Image (cartoon, rainbow, N blue to C red; front, side):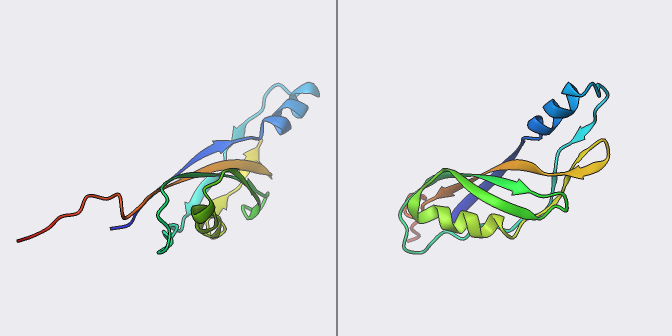
Amino acid sequence: MRSLIATFCLVSGFAILGSVYERGEAHLRFDSPSVISTTQAIYPPRSIASGTVILEVGVDGSGKIGDVRVVHDIPSLTEPARESVHQWKFEPARLNGEPVKSKVTVAFTFVSPNLAPSVQYH
């Protein structure tokens, strides 16, 4: 059985907040982007690797995926993770109610089917 666990962590917006704060606007409300839908990554049939691929995903003001930067690469697993995250849908981050660009860190943990315990029936 092939297994994959995808997790994500919301990051960023701090550069935006810092520049606004320097202008003296002390009452800020930042709402992180939220995931609307995800697509599970497919474990490549010829791979024997396992581990966690970490991606930094740019989300624009309309919630669309922009640039995807690889933070931690596993050669045979990174591309399926990238393909999956490009299909995700987000509600954009908001600063004082206005949509803003942000970044989201997404981790895909792959477990090799060869490492899964096998069950034999007699």
